Length: 496
Image (cartoon, rainbow, N blue to C red):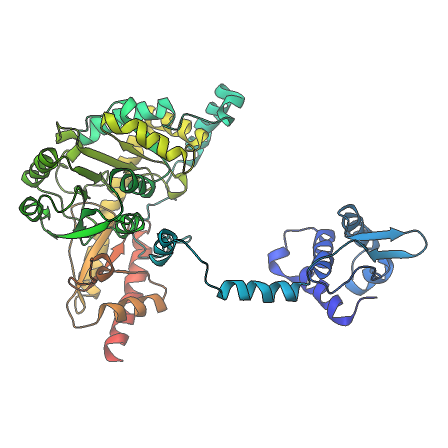
């Protein structure tokens, strides 16, 4: 018979909410198996008779028999006619307590990483919230996504392609999707793209890592907007590059700083459509000046066309790549913001001479992007559904930005001044009431409101204090509730 503690362990497995979806016999089987693996039931130890255990647990004998049969089939127990059931003699597991102790020791040991690995670990990576809450930035509205339409297109792909859709695909990307991307960026962004210049990736983050490692050597420098998207700076840091901060004003990156020191770096990273995080659009004269700088000095422009689909005031300027006759611009795009984060499809439009090198390099990372998702997305774009979805979301997001701006001015006027952008998925706010940025962000988090402090986006942690408020994924009602919570939290922090 089980010891009291062992019986209680089995009962706890039965009652635990996390196991509620499992059949009773499976819960009992898993609980006993865990006792064996942990060493609480050693080799040769007898198990309770099925009738007795059924009575102790308040279940049927058949349920216990099913659990024992599964344990026997897996080799954890032996069943001897006339004698009962016993833990198998050949089970030789390291007791769980010793395993836990060993794991604790290993976690506390230095991992002995390479210098490159240590640098990547120190910069803490780029993590997205799994369950976003207001005002997490850069998150699109997914509740309005046409799932049934997407499922229908995916079924069409599987029906027409059959088992072929399950095979590896071209590491450069499925040709139908590359063609659809080229057509889209040419029409909507004024790009100069063809299908053979597009490489389909899993994300814009992967694109930046590839560019950093393929175009520059460790120790070389790259001009980066200041403030800038933290994922880009971390990708460049991980590649061993030196990031040279260039200030940003209302017309985007101050190109004159680069022109005045043209040989300091071999590349520049830009978010010209909606500069992250300020939302500024890069002025045309500055775009042209950077194009000439890159051509004259054989430098590269890495253009991240971040959330360019969502422009709310006037007509967006053509992308830098489309203005560049010298082919020194690498255009980076993603469907994560326009559709849904779980899609994991991004892309680059490359100068012709870079297509083969970057395609080969990506095979060393992940081979290729998932083929079924690529083919489904191609149909989604070709059928006009992507354009329709973007137009619908643009209208929704413009309304949500308007709602958030009005609420911030009404309830947070004592603390911040909103810097209303012409596009994008977040509202920058500058602190004006003397409250420290860290205090404001921490106070918000304590009441379930997520803010991104602006100082973390500056090269040296400087700049004006403030925070970003993402609005795209939240309804007007959710925005109103969150602003109310935030106002209460900031008032309390001010008087503390």
